Image 1: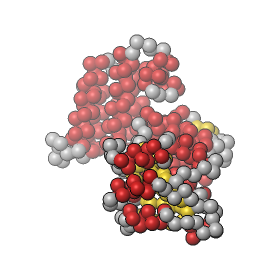
Image 2: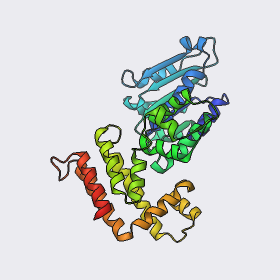
Image 3: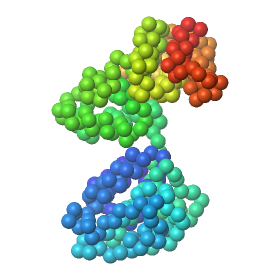
Length: 333
């Protein structure tokens, strides 16, 4: 079952006997757990009818025992198991899943791991209960997710602001959500969030970031690229090299796609590149600066830089110097 479908059901007041939430993306799991923990029972019924357990500190028979309890002056019992990935003998849950207590809502937050789909427990949960696999979003899905999240909070945002947030915060949805909450606290409802608002309230520089570095390299502006490199060197925690290299790899890979595209119309390229049409002209501009042979060399430079940043074939060169060398190679060699 998908995250949005589960949340829609919960908001409508429909609760199922078992929610097994698993997978790499903790954010979606945490959001469902938080909703059930706060909303499944009125606050005055929670002390007798809601139990929070932790996988490291409990065992599966204790979980089942709690789930079999009857509610006290309430419609349901809620049992939430956080860190359920640490539960031993999880397969013993299958007997309870086959015949659950109908007045209980049992939630297992099984983060960073997934059940073996060949096992009986997986099949029982999949057929009769809510089983959600929470997958990491791809980098190209992050801007749309940010836009939807802001819209749900009552905000519009400029494409540049959304791009700046996505480029700077990566794909950690929990971190992005926290930063959007900061914006929500200071930006009036209904106001459009622009890059100035992002810089002022989140602390991301609108002039010195990966987005601007990509623009500088796309224009082959060595001076501007080196200004940004010096800012990164002075603020290494804000701009880790591994993130920068990953984003540059994505950018130059897209330039290669433009050269090979049959449909070079703005709408065709936006679809091919999986980007907001607003940014297509920036990619087209970059493609005029680098031909396919040059782009192939750049991809090899990026791979080499990535390996060296991880210590392969590199003993003493700092991340700052690796980026400086990479910028020079991209523009001049």
